[in-house]
Length: 500
Image (cartoon, rainbow, N blue to C red):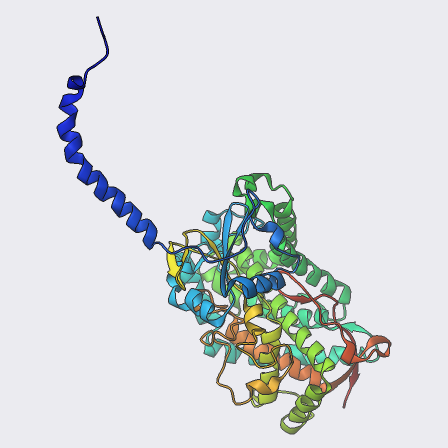
């Protein structure tokens, strides 16, 4: 007998199928509509299979990203392994990322070199907390009220003046000798921060070996954080730590913990909860912080405070030496406003040219060329492009500072461009955002904008400077070295001579 089914065998399916066709058509049309409405990713170079755009990047990422932006536009995207990276390189792009879409793009991308997992950083970190959660808000509020409030900053002025004066006294003993100015400034700032945190100097200025060693340790951590990490490109390899970057970072951090663990232990043993607070360690202990939390916050405060500030001052000194015209103008202003006795912080605010000079330094040499990596909490549209959830998002402030459509003669060092200008550093003028903007703006901005001009004013007002071996300052090498902070490729080695 013929077993081939006839059409009559499937006749019961016809009516339901006929009724479902309109529904299927509507669903397909809806999906197609959604797909067509979704904006494309930001443009960028065509990625290679598996590796993406890794080979489109050079060692100095800030330069290669800037070149790509000139080709593809102010908002670009790249595939680095399995990860999507979006980079904004104009004031308009920065405004969209850090202001208009700040809520959705203010998560932090966790680089895999960090020794802690996300759930740990959510408890102990301000800088690297993956989200702006309640703990992050609580810690930021504590910093804002106890360490960086207007009242706190004013009360710390005497300490900053004292440490700057100690730097001048030490440099007086070094007349005629070649010094690494970055190391001296780093030690001065490190001691200022350590006195705020636990009322002790950490480095003797005369011990340049220790100062240099500690700066090298911090610089090493910065370099590890910026080293291209295959575990960032392919997170499945995170547990293997194939380049041993996390292990190396852990070793550096443990060395830093060792600098102050004895002070924490001693203070904890003597701490009385309601006793008057003498420094920030007392504040931490009064809030019930454990050693893991205190240690990690100290690392963030020291690294962010000392490294970026000393780097900015080193760049400023290099630009002043290289540009004789600028040196003459800033010295004339200092001689006019500051007497030959001790310098006070209140006087430094009366130095418009010096402060314009610092803005110009931060424009050309931002301490953090990409700020720090953001992460998209949700998919959103920026400048008519889609930024998918969990994409890594950067703002190339180095490119913005050198954009010829924003700045006249962008590669020239001209502090005069800021005289009479309303542009400030508080994160609302997106042409100049060295401290970032939005929720993730640097909490130490109020302190940095006091400390940097004070130290620089001391260096210029009390000393004449020359390069070693009688080199012409006009030929000074101004190449940079890429990292989380943008350092001089060749450290500035100069000779002080006391003026009076």
